[in-house]
Amino acid sequence: MSYEGVLEQSAANLRQLLKDGEEVIGYIYPHTPLELILAHGLTPSLLRALPGVPGGFEESLQTFACSYIRNLYSQRTNDQMPSLAGLIFPGNTCDSLQNLFDVWRFRFPDDTIFRLTYPVTRHEKDGSTVKYLTTELQLLSEAIEKSLDRPFVSQYFERAKSLIGQFRKDSQYLYGARLLDPSVLSYTDLCRLARAFLTTPLPVIGSEIYAITSSVKEKMKDMGFAGTVDSILRALKTRDFSNIDNFEPIIRPRIIVTGGMVEPQAIANVITGIRGITDSVLVLDLLSFGFKTAFTPPLVTKGTPFEQMAKSILSSPGEPTQEGLIHRVKYLESLFDALQIDGVMICEQSFCDPDQFEAPSIEKAASKHGIRTVRIPIDPELSDRARMEVRIQSFLESLSKS
Image (cartoon, rainbow, N blue to C red):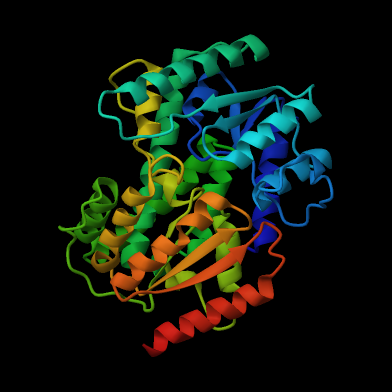
């Protein structure tokens, strides 16, 4: 299915929900607690930057606003967003998102908007970050109930834990299987499944992902790779890559895509648009709407619902402004050799300072391991797609010759 087709399919599912009378809360940050929204009897839907959105409405935004933020603002100004019961903004993540919240509140005063403020760090040992985020989640829950008259229902919460937990478990397995044999499931299909679920997290979509995961598990078992996939998954979750079972890569070259809030489906679309190239060369992404979303840990059973969600969020693969550069680069270096990576494609969302500032550190880390890198500037409209394709093709050709 084409990129445009995937966009239309996910949008159609959302439109049908709204037509059926469901109330939807939009969110734009990958570590938003979906379980909390579902526990209030509402449907969470990830708002994405869309290609083909007319600009010219960004005069209210600061000059540092990235292309992703500008695209979201233009969607709202052009009335291209779905009819939302509310919209959740993050706080303490980046200046662009903070500015968007402030401008949105002023420009669209009739919109119901909420803000969930995250702690500035995730590595305090005294438990203060958990307590802080737990309180913030409680305040968000109270604000939703007050504004939308939708109370937090424990039964809904338990149902949401099961649904979201199974989605993450299945997605994680698919990521692990592709690291061993990327041909077992195309990256394009993996992105399509994740996008569909995050746009409308319905049991029917979760069931489709579960069925595909079960099929992939059977293939891995038949090929004698079940144990190796399990060891890869343990390594990705624990960040310890010393005990991965040895394996011989089936397809070369093997590249990783890094970046921030970049649309994985767009990356897959660009790669498959290059003649003679398939997305099997892309064995792993470390993107916010891909890997970082899938590898958010499941909720534990101990503690209040808000404490459970806080611990899950704070244990997830982090963002530049929270987890810290040292931790992310160390993680990246540890998987280079263990997963036999040949190249790193660094996607840079236009004007996204947090991600672009760390690009030199990623290049330096890769160079230490003899791994080549390429920077790919990108915006939601794929306005420079032809040049992107040439750079990626040249990069892959250089890897094939080495």
